[in-house]
Image (cartoon, rainbow, N blue to C red; front, side, top):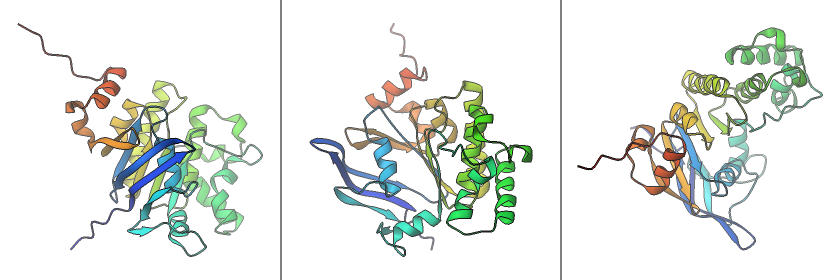
Length: 257
């Protein structure tokens, strides 16, 4: 019988900053091999939800579970296992200006996995090919690349270690519509091709509809609507409808008479 334990789960998670609650008993999970998109307005806890999973913050109460086990610190804890099996695309790509493109892509291989430079470079170039960048960019510096290329390099770095779970932080922010569409389609191809799980936070409805299998809408520190991306347009939940209207995607109201 197949194990239906979520690969990642937020279980009754609460988090506040001072007297301002951000998450209030959040219950959410990502199923292995699927793409989960977390949406919500500014200040609704999208980034906090991601940072809790990455261990950059600790919940005030509740637990974050990886493969059914609570995240714990230490070199042999569940958090360490999650790190080894995950890749992250940061919102601004977060490349190091002093390193070449291939050194940025291979940063984890060189510094954490202690792989030799020759092999690390080869694997970095393979990852660049996966995101449709030629080997000729490997020796360039980030300052020599366009915004879309920087995002692709960030994606290459996220997938170079062949992760089981991929975290994507606003993957299309700051990109023009054509480049954003290319990045969205690339994410779909990468996730399906690698068979990994993706957890994405975004406010971009077009991006969400393209890359998501499941969508979770946050409001008031909780998931107020969740379901398959195909069901989103039919949802009558007011928060979902506000997002749909803001993106010009809501269904027109029926005519009277």
